[in-house]
Image (cartoon, rainbow, N blue to C red; front, side):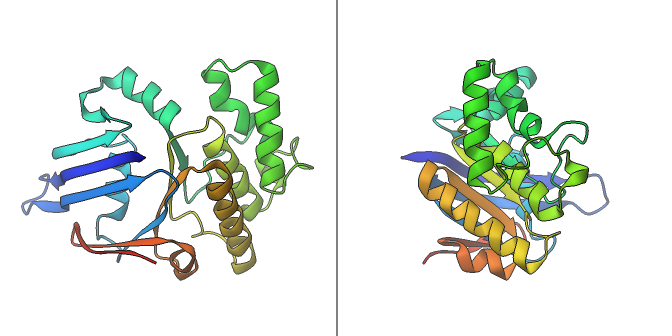
Length: 227
């Protein structure tokens, strides 16, 4: 089942004397359950592409369609709600709420979506156990290592059962052991939950685990390979 379609997507920055084509006519489709990496050098357009797919930035032209909804047609409040229900995010800097526990961070979006307390508790417990942090539910981010914080971020991204997860350089701040653990966890969750993962990454360890590798250079897709 197709969960995401990117059609003739462009992002042009005109603030400087020379126009910058950060994304330059990209067409891509993702099916449910994919484990894909978007790779390329710094400045190739990877993060800009992810930001437009996630509804965090608007394209200059072109369309992003998620579950048959063209997100460019949604107003500001509707795109926020749509994003919350359909897309999970994992950022390089974790972006956990420091005053909340691991459990409260994972529950946060489910609370906004008005899940019952019982369902929130069950889903949070299931996910934190899946990422190996069942015994750290009441720990705040400052009491967790970087790798543990990123595992909480992965659990949070999956909490509301999104159509797909966008992970922007999720291993950039992690050591080799934490990276290996995180990637195995994400692969297991990808299989178990059948949720699409789309990475933007420089990390060869992520690239080695990915089942599909999309190379972007100068805002264009130069190769798209399935292992």
